[in-house]
Image 1 (cartoon, rainbow, N blue to C red):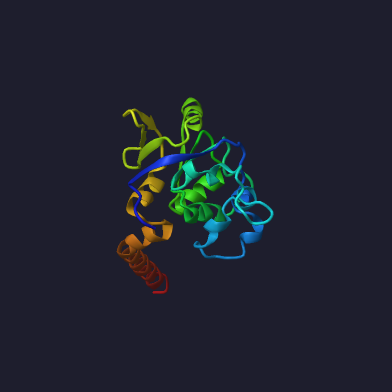
Image 2: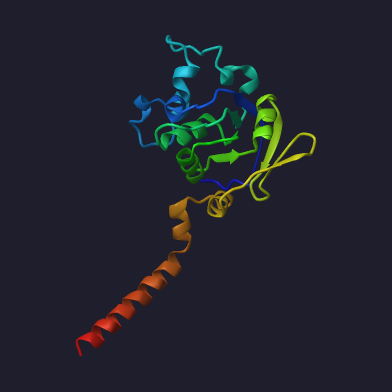
Length: 203
């Protein structure tokens, strides 16, 4: 994972509510454990027509949405089954952050662990963002705010451990490896302590 400190982009908007993980990445594409290559199947059954051509009615197929890495989505985004492939697909598609008034807990946890910034904002602010596709935003992870074009700010909260991992570009395993020396020292001290207890027991 790369460190995520600031994301600057125009917004793409999906106003539909209850976009579930199967809509983000259909189950038939879950046969891989690779994080790359899933972007072409992101929103597959919504994004393409039956003949494989682009669906002109899909909002992210519109020219104005091309290159946008911030997605403003309808309420209850990422609901449904738990699948880590959903954030993988969004990241591979080019989405770096999702803003919504309500994001499914399991999806949000999976997303943050994989470097996809998922931000919950107030209902009024969410409605305002949904109504303004193409808005230029800057997301400051350290400061925990979204900067608007007029200089205004929308605050958000991140769980401290998730924020630390995002800012430092590490996942849970990477975080543990950063403290390998401390872990080794603890294990050795514990082994020494247990050996001493064992020795006294059998004296």
